[in-house]
Amino acid sequence: MLWLVVVQWLHVLLGILWFGSTLYINLVFIPAVLPLSREKQQEIAARISPMTTRVLRPTAFLVVALGFMRGTLLGPLHSIQDVVGTRYGITWLVALAGALVLEGFIEGLFDPAVRRLNTAKADAEYAAALRRVQVFSVFELMGFFAIFTCMILLRFSL
Image (cartoon, rainbow, N blue to C red; front, side, top):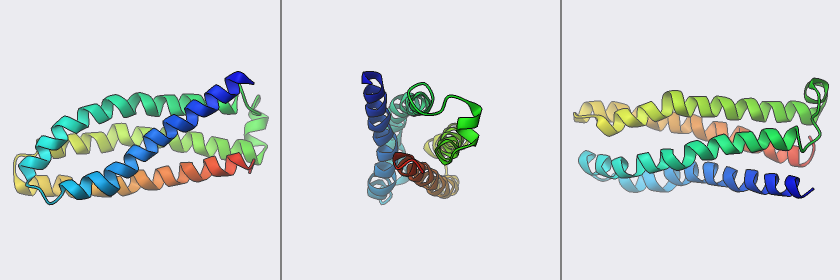
């Protein structure tokens, strides 16, 4: 029982850090930095991007790993039939797949787009990279919304 509480607590806390950081970056940080010059934006991003990656990469991994543990080792899913044969199992599987896809999207597309944004030399190149990052941000938030919805459904065993 103690392990269940610890794993659940860490899963929720780290999930809040991961999703909350994304919300903060998209709703507060980016709008506050956009009016600045390209050079100033890149200077700020050069300081924040590496730290964000250093914190959120392991956070994302732990959220997924703890969610897996919470559903299987410490939860109700002990067989393939439990996963594919119950509403809870299917919702859990959708959440797991969504988190893995989201993490792959962030690592494979979003982070490289941010790096290109941070290294763009010309204003036109920067503007194109910025549009791409803004579109990717919307996809990232939609992914988090879907996963968060699954977490709420799981809480009510749906």
